[in-house]
Image 1 (cartoon, rainbow, N blue to C red):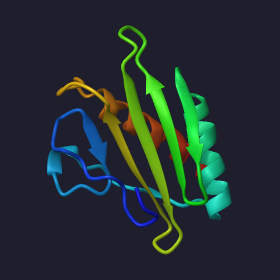
Image 2 (cartoon, rainbow, N blue to C red; image 1 turned 45 degrees about the vertical axis):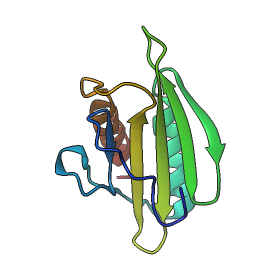
Image 3 (cartoon, rainbow, N blue to C red; image 1 turned 90 degrees about the horizontal axis):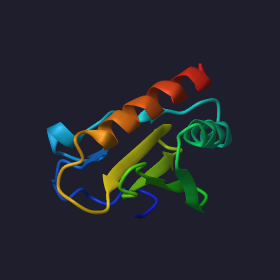
Length: 121
């Protein structure tokens, strides 16, 4: 993952991204809050509300979380990219294993998006 883009999706239906050209796996990026710092804190607060979620890496423009499923202990990687130029938060959420996740990554990121938008209003 670079400062400009997220890792591309493989095309399996166990992931979503704001930067994919695959329509069924695409989601809309999130808007910035007042500043990058406030936006990052809002994402951290939002992800902190999610069960079995751990922040594993933080850099100036990125956050990387690992979410562990309750039953089978599968791990999903969630990456956020903060783009100061466009004032958008790009994200990618993908299962590490398997082919289908029954929509878990999409549902999670829809929930994250809703919670985040409430915080920055």
